[in-house]
Image (tube, rainbow, N blue to C red):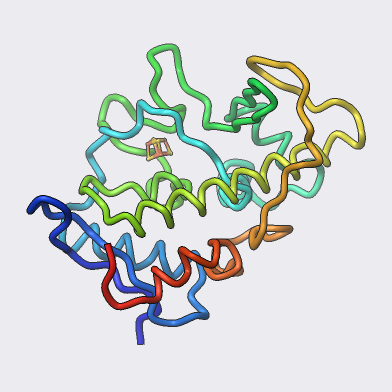
Length: 219
Ligand code: SF4
């Protein structure tokens, strides 16, 4: 039985979009990604060949780094994998005490992984959480909140682990600056996890959202 249901739904004021319902409390983030990718292919259109969202800021989560790292460095990196990946492919930005870690962009503002000639992602199958959860359709409120809470928690865990790789020294910041309380960052269900199949949705989202996600119909 499927653990996640992704389906077309009539949203506010007669517009159509998609909704997400959790059918099984043991659902992991990978189940959610599989269901979204399947829905995208079946009901919308495969996003290969479209680069519409690849010119925007793409925040990274901790498991994204390990997925990309295995691919780009030819195997798991054991020594400071997050620093090594971000030095080549990321940007660490800080402002007003908030740290943002995103995929690097080129001089035109395109994601570093975008093949601009063919308008496709060079690592489509392994693209990051924020990219896999972007569907070119409006979403229900609970679908939007789910995506937002997962990306935020995953990015917070990435910031926490990035800081740990500096062994008590001030972590490197590429852009912006100012004081940052690195110890305030925590990753909820993402803590110390490297893959999306190990992270349960119920361990990441807040209680109110969990109730809405497991309800049959909501807005
Ligand atoms: S990782 Fe791929 S899908 Fe995501 S923004 Fe970059 S090029 Fe686009």
